[in-house]
Image (cartoon, rainbow, N blue to C red; front, side, top):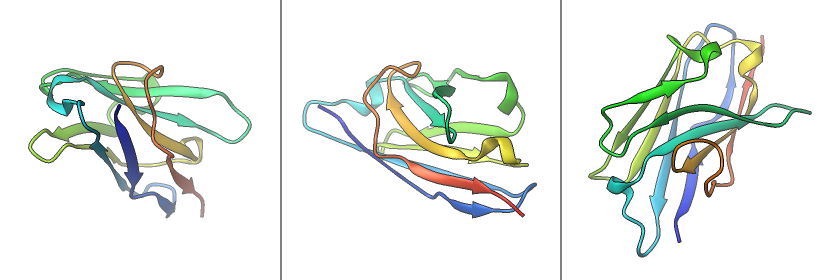
Amino acid sequence: QVQLVESGGGSVEPGGSKRLSCAATGSGFDFSSNAMSWVRQAPGKGLEWVCSLTADGSYSKYIRSVEGRFTISRDNSKNLLYLQMDNLNSDDTAMYYCAEGWGKGGTRGPGTQVTVSS
Protein backbone atom coordinates (compact mmCIF):
# COMPACT_ATOMS: atom_id res chain seq x y z
CA GLN A 1 0.00 0.00 0.00
CA VAL A 2 1.38 3.39 -0.99
CA GLN A 3 1.30 6.48 1.19
CA LEU A 4 1.49 9.83 -0.56
CA VAL A 5 2.14 13.19 1.06
CA GLU A 6 1.95 16.44 -0.87
CA SER A 7 3.65 19.71 0.05
CA GLY A 8 4.44 23.11 -1.39
CA GLY A 9 1.02 24.69 -1.57
CA GLY A 10 0.07 28.13 -0.37
CA SER A 11 -1.12 31.49 -1.61
CA VAL A 12 0.25 33.09 -4.74
CA GLU A 13 -0.65 36.10 -6.86
CA PRO A 14 -1.92 35.72 -10.41
CA GLY A 15 0.98 35.17 -12.76
CA GLY A 16 3.07 33.63 -10.03
CA SER A 17 4.57 30.17 -9.67
CA LYS A 18 4.43 27.27 -7.26
CA ARG A 19 6.26 23.98 -7.11
CA LEU A 20 4.44 21.09 -5.49
CA SER A 21 6.13 17.95 -4.25
CA CYS A 22 4.77 14.51 -3.42
CA ALA A 23 6.65 11.96 -1.35
CA ALA A 24 5.75 8.32 -1.88
CA THR A 25 6.37 5.66 0.74
CA GLY A 26 5.03 2.23 1.55
CA SER A 27 6.33 -1.27 1.77
CA GLY A 28 5.81 -3.17 -1.40
CA PHE A 29 5.27 -0.06 -3.51
CA ASP A 30 7.82 0.38 -6.25
CA PHE A 31 7.61 4.06 -7.13
CA SER A 32 9.90 3.72 -10.13
CA SER A 33 7.56 1.19 -11.71
CA ASN A 34 4.38 3.24 -11.45
CA ALA A 35 2.94 6.06 -13.50
CA MET A 36 1.92 8.98 -11.31
CA SER A 37 -0.56 11.80 -11.65
CA TRP A 38 -1.68 15.10 -10.22
CA VAL A 39 -5.35 15.81 -9.74
CA ARG A 40 -7.16 18.78 -8.22
CA GLN A 41 -10.46 19.77 -6.73
CA ALA A 42 -11.63 23.35 -6.85
CA PRO A 43 -14.16 24.66 -4.32
CA GLY A 44 -17.60 23.29 -5.10
CA LYS A 45 -16.39 21.20 -8.03
CA GLY A 46 -15.52 17.59 -8.68
CA LEU A 47 -12.13 15.95 -8.84
CA GLU A 48 -10.28 16.94 -12.01
CA TRP A 49 -7.34 15.14 -13.56
CA VAL A 50 -4.47 17.58 -14.26
CA CYS A 51 -1.58 15.55 -15.64
CA SER A 52 0.15 12.18 -15.63
CA LEU A 53 3.69 10.93 -16.12
CA THR A 54 4.99 7.50 -17.06
CA ALA A 55 7.10 5.48 -14.65
CA ASP A 56 10.34 6.35 -16.40
CA GLY A 57 9.41 10.00 -16.85
CA SER A 58 9.60 9.85 -20.63
CA TYR A 59 5.99 10.72 -21.46
CA SER A 60 3.51 13.11 -19.91
CA LYS A 61 0.05 14.37 -20.69
CA TYR A 62 -1.81 17.42 -19.46
CA ILE A 63 -5.30 18.76 -19.34
CA ARG A 64 -5.55 21.46 -22.00
CA SER A 65 -6.06 24.31 -19.54
CA VAL A 66 -2.60 23.83 -18.01
CA GLU A 67 -0.58 22.87 -21.09
CA GLY A 68 2.46 25.10 -21.41
CA ARG A 69 2.12 26.33 -17.82
CA PHE A 70 2.48 23.18 -15.70
CA THR A 71 5.28 20.61 -15.80
CA ILE A 72 5.14 17.23 -14.10
CA SER A 73 8.41 15.51 -13.25
CA ARG A 74 9.80 12.87 -10.93
CA ASP A 75 12.95 11.74 -9.17
CA ASN A 76 12.80 7.97 -8.93
CA SER A 77 15.95 7.84 -6.80
CA LYS A 78 14.11 9.80 -4.09
CA ASN A 79 10.53 8.57 -4.64
CA LEU A 80 9.43 12.14 -5.33
CA LEU A 81 6.90 13.55 -7.78
CA TYR A 82 6.80 17.25 -8.67
CA LEU A 83 4.46 19.72 -10.26
CA GLN A 84 5.93 23.02 -11.43
CA MET A 85 3.12 25.50 -11.94
CA ASP A 86 3.81 28.78 -13.73
CA ASN A 87 1.63 31.70 -14.79
CA LEU A 88 -1.03 30.72 -12.31
CA ASN A 89 -4.51 32.16 -12.50
CA SER A 90 -7.60 32.09 -10.31
CA ASP A 91 -8.94 29.01 -12.10
CA ASP A 92 -5.99 27.07 -10.70
CA THR A 93 -7.17 27.59 -7.13
CA ALA A 94 -7.79 24.12 -5.76
CA MET A 95 -6.68 21.35 -3.47
CA TYR A 96 -3.97 19.47 -5.33
CA TYR A 97 -3.40 15.76 -4.87
CA CYS A 98 -0.82 13.38 -6.23
CA ALA A 99 -2.22 10.03 -7.23
CA GLU A 100 -0.88 6.61 -7.95
CA GLY A 101 -1.18 5.53 -11.52
CA TRP A 102 -2.38 7.17 -14.72
CA GLY A 103 -5.53 9.23 -14.29
CA LYS A 104 -7.50 10.25 -11.25
CA GLY A 105 -8.63 6.91 -9.88
CA GLY A 106 -5.63 5.82 -7.84
CA THR A 107 -4.70 6.24 -4.21
CA ARG A 108 -4.29 9.91 -3.29
CA GLY A 109 -2.55 11.82 -0.56
CA PRO A 110 -4.24 14.31 1.80
CA GLY A 111 -3.55 17.13 -0.65
CA THR A 112 -2.03 20.60 -0.54
CA GLN A 113 -4.05 23.78 -1.07
CA VAL A 114 -3.09 26.28 -3.75
CA THR A 115 -4.85 29.63 -3.71
CA VAL A 116 -4.32 32.14 -6.50
CA SER A 117 -5.46 35.57 -5.48
CA SER A 118 -4.37 39.18 -5.59
